[in-house]
Amino acid sequence: MEKTILRSVFGGYNKKDVLAKTDAYNSLILIIESGRTSDAVINAELEKIRQMPVRKARFLFLPATGFSVPQTEKYFSDLENEIKQKIML
Image (cartoon, rainbow, N blue to C red; front, side, top):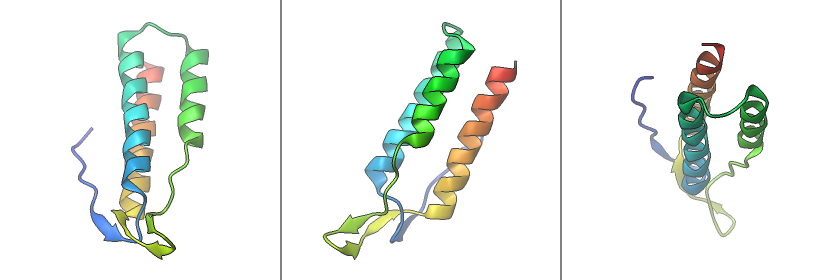
């Protein structure tokens, strides 16, 4: 997978939420690569990750700086595609 840099924009996704979800995806990729788990466990973990909330960045009631929404969505999609490719191998 190519290196991706997420831009900070006004009103984007909360950075902590994005980093937590990204860490979860990367942890799942490492588990898959180690080959120590079944497809059922992988699918359950993937569904948990998909359900993780990613909120918009806010300061009180006002928008704040966060990661770009379109870039973040594309990055999550790329990570899911990578996981699907590793499962199919």
